[in-house]
Each structure stands twice: as structure tokens, then as C-alpha cells.
Length: 492
Image (tube, rainbow, N blue to C red):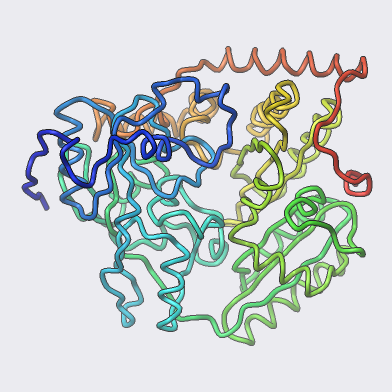
């Protein structure tokens, strides 16, 4: 479907567009927390305009204006991504989709919700709950992230994904605005060009999302184990059962300690596994009983209902809680098989001990029995060497990860340099998408298909940092900035 859209001649005169510096600054960042000197010194990383469209026609008008004047268009949802996916690296106009927050229709007979793309996941979930309905899948950033935001980064690990699949598996159709301003409704395979592509194929303005009835019961349990190897094996076991969990998360002691403010007294030193089931009362009971028997056979210790419930209640803010606990948080995400996770976790600990820096992880079960493994380097950017050593550790994990068939979970801006080096098939796919739909390269430039930094330069920088940090530790001049209790640091 093609709509005739009135041309915007001067974007600064449009009432839902702003050139105020406060609005431009607020819309030009995300939750990375990257120090000012690391990225923000690039003054071009600031939007020239911020637009708040409320329908497809307004989105199309903005895109037509941008194409005519050859300025960048950067779609933005909740800004919860850690990888600069909505950073305006070439200025231009930020299209803030949050005003696109209407529920157009809820069809209880066919079980779908027709919604605008900028609605926040948690808001939609609460509105559905009032009608006895629920979402099938949600990201862990549900209190702030938008529907299309999770689609744009390729959401496949979150609440519900082990049972119901990726976000794309749960979308029936989309209304989109292409980079030339054309408005279309697409279904099936055509929707794949918007899955994990950071808006380079256009902007999603509305979609039909598969929903379900509110589950009769939701419950689970949490155990601690001596090693991550136990957790990886159990994750594979539970992912292959007929009664699949709706959520499974693995955390190490430092992550659990920082995010929950302490550890249960009877916990072991290796890691924690939280598993949750939903559905009928009978299904949930069978799932919990099966998991409990598996956990006990593996030598796990039940940490108690209170700690489980607290951790489950925090499922949507668990990442942000860690962010709030440390001055600066660097992270890297991998999409991989559970059996290979222990290799990366062990390597992370080894490097962190050598560099005298902090490290922790969590792992979330996603669609198809795969997991999202998140490695963190908590730091303080005021201590430059400590911060950069954490980044060097994550760089080493990326290089090692590809040896174990791991891929990067989130790409955005910062991981494009790795995409070109290690994931050439995906990189070529993104190039094809951009060449087909946005040959001028104005839709979210520098994401997925271009990098201002070469891999060789990046690798040299982090390799040299690692050497220097190692010498500092050998001469006992390196120190860890963020301390943790000794009993938390003892890893098995």
C-alpha cells in the first residue's frame, strides 16, 4: 500500500519536531554508560533534530524530508540497548517511536493484539492482564524497551522464549515505512528484513502480536551449584523436555551478590540456576518436580523460596540493577549452545584474575535451546587502565567465542567491527538488505554494514593494554578498584 504524504519543507517548523539541545542530547545516548572520553567526544554523535511521530504518515513525511536533504534517519525505541544501536553517528534526525503507543485492536478469538510499535512491553502486558490475557514473550528490559526495539536487535532470549520462540515467531504482520517513504503491510518472510537489522530496512510503525490467555499458575525454584558445568548440562536437559520452562537464568556469585545485595547463607560457590514454569497448575507442578529432581541429582542446594521469589520478581530489572551498583559497566553478549558456555566463563575468570579486574556473568535460555551468555566487566571510568582492561578482557572473549561456535547476540554499532571479521555471512546479508532498501545509506548509518575502526587497530589496542596490565600486576602496581567479599570471589 502506498500513501500520498504531504512533503515537509522545513522540519524545524513541524510541531512534533524539536531542535532544542536538551532534547537532542537526551535522545542521542543509550544505557551504555560509556565514558565521555570514549565516544562522546565525537561531536557529530549528536542528533540535529528529534521527531515524535504519531502515525505512519508522519514517519513517512520525515523519511521523505531526510532523503530529499540527504540527512541520516535514526529510529529509536526505549534506548535500552547497550551497543549504540540508536546512536546518531552522523547527526540527522532521531525518530523517537515512543509516541506510537496505541493499542489498535485486541482479538480474543484469534489471540492477537494489533499495536503501534512504540508501546513499552510492560505497559502492554499490564493492559492485556486487565482482560485476562498475557504476552507470550517479553525482553528482560520490559519496563523501558519498546516492541519494535526488541525486534530491531533480534530478540530471541528473554521471558517466554524457551517455550514460545523469538519475537519474530510471535509476529503475524507489520506495517512499515520503507527508506523511500513508502508505507507497506508485510507478512511472512518479508518481515525478516526487520529482525535484528537495527532499522536499516525502514521503520516498523505497527504490528500484530500473538498473545495468550493468562496462565493459571507461574512458579519455579532456584538452586546453587559448585560449577557452571553443572548449570550448562542442566540447561540443556531442561530445554529439551516436553514441559519447557518459560524462563531459565544462570548467574555467578558476584553477579548475584551485586544485583541482589547478598547471597543466601546455604549457597555454593559456583553459580545459581533459576527456573520458572507457567501454564496449568498441573503443568507447572510437573515442571518444578522434574527440575527439582535434576538439580538434586546434580548436587545442587535449594536456596529457598524467598530468594527465588525475589530473583523472579526482579527479572525485568536484573540487568539495570547491576548497572546501578557499579560506576561503569562494560559487557559483551554471545548467542551459543549451553555446553560451550563454561569455556568462556572459565576464560573470563582467568583473565580477570590476571588483570586484577572485576568480572561476572549471567546466562539466559532462549529459543531453540540456545542461550544468551552475557559477560560483564564492572569498573569505574575514572580509573582508565582498570576500565580499558575490562574492555580488553571482553575483546579476548569475543576472539575465543568464535572458536566455540558462538555468535554475537546484539550487533548495533560497537560490534560491527567483529561482524565484518567473524560473521561474514551475516555481514553480507545486512549489506544486501541495505543495498536493496537504502542505497544512500541514510537509515541508521554505521550500523551493521560500516565501521569507523578497523579490526587490526582494535586488536592491537586491546592486546597492548593487556600486556601493560599484566606487567602492572606482576610488579604489584595494579589494583582492583571494585572490591567484593572474599567468600564471593572464591570460584569453583
